[in-house]
Amino acid sequence: MGIVVFCITITLTTMKQLLTLGLACLLLTACKKDTEKTEDTEITAETTPALTFENKEYSQKSNLPCRGENCTTVNISVPVATEGVVGDSINRKVFNVTRSIVYFGEQPSNSTNYEELMASFIKSYEELAKKFPSDAIPWEAKIKATVDYKTDSIIGIKLNNYVYTGGAHGYEGNRSLLFNAVTGRSLAYSDIFKDEKAFTAYAEKKFREKFKIPANKSINATGLFFENDKFVLPLNIFFKEDGLLLYYNSVEVGSFADGPKELLLPYADIDQYMRLK
Image (tube, rainbow, N blue to C red; front, side, top):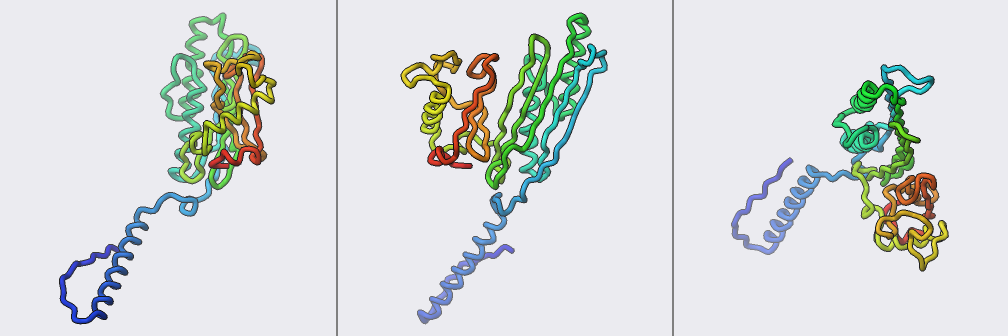
């Protein structure tokens, strides 16, 4: 209910009347401010229902003949958040990351849903197979996403992916999608760490210890491929029950044959750096 306070010039004859009028004005103004605050309520843990997820499965298969047991297929399994704008934000991010993985060509397709995305991938294969039928080895794309971590402040989704579009082998990797559990907004490292620079220095020290890289040597001294010979945090960080997992996929900082690089840092050891956990 809106409340309007009129300013009236009056003459009062006693201090008692002045005091009474002043108190009344203060009460009216306070009521007005409370009304305005209610109309512009911020999204908080108390105003947002707890997110729930249901698993969705999608699959498509090419109509072209298979080669033995090998067929061109796409299989996608993702958790879908069910609550309002917060859920929509998370679902949109999961889809966009999937779209950035399941494609063939110079750029991802402009698909707007999983059915279109799978159809686009299979169409690319079928067009190539018609041009070069003798070289048409079946393709494969798999996405397996799961809610890997969930608290009142953080939702972590692990997205395992495998894509094969010809060649000696396919590529498998893991992606970490981290969200603010209240707003659905993707988390940046500045949201997670109080001092990203200090945490990076600590992580490098522990990384060198685990992979036996001398402190007085280049970070790439043992055959790694950090860009500009400088240690950086991985693109993917996973929150686990017992600590923070730094995860470098194959070929991100080393050779394909070396596989991924992992470093688990217990929360007790990194609490001073953490803004969220």
